[in-house]
Length: 211
Image (cartoon, rainbow, N blue to C red; front, side, top):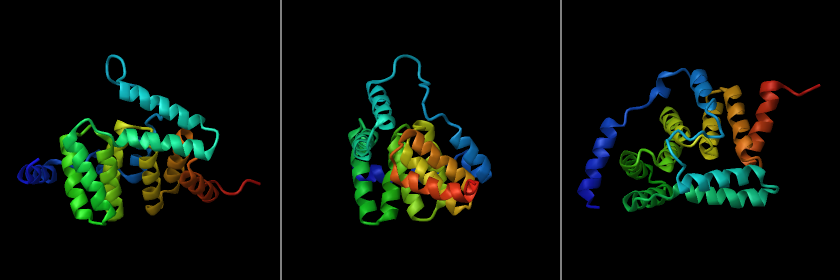
C-alpha cells in the first residue's frame, strides 16, 4: 500500500477514533461493566458461527480442560496465533510492522500502525489488544482501558486483555476489580501463571487470610 495512503489513514484515525464510554465511567463502574460480560460467549450474529469462530470455541474449551500447564500453554499458543491472523493482507502487513516496532520500543510508530489497523478492521480483535498493550507501555492507562474494553466486547475470553485490565486496576488501587479480573482469567485459562500469582496475592489483601 502506498505510504501516502497509510499516512492519510493515520490522520483520519487520530481525528475520528473517539474514546469509548469507558473513559466517562468511574473506574469501579467501568470494572463492573467489563467483567460482567460472560466468558462463555453467546454468538450475536444470526446464522451459524463461522469456521474461525467454531475453531476458537474448540480451542478455548480445550484450554479450560487442559490437564497440565504444558498442555495449556500449547493450546494458548494456538489461540494466540488464531487471534492474530487476519484475512486482510494489508492488516497483516500493518500488524507485522507494528509488532516489529514494539520489539524495537518504537512506540509512536507502533501506535501509528495500530491506529490504521483498528480503522481498517474495527472487528479485528488483536488490533485493539495490541494497541492497548502499547498504551500500557506508555503509561497511558485510560487509553489502554478504552482499547481493552473494545477487545473484550469482541472476544470476552481474551485472557491477555483481562490480565491487562487486572494490572491497570491494581495501578489504580482497585484491588477487588483486579481480583475479579484474574479469577475470570482462571475460569478461562486455569493454568495461567500470571493470573494464578496475582489472584493468590490479591485474595489475601482483599479477602484476608481465612481463620
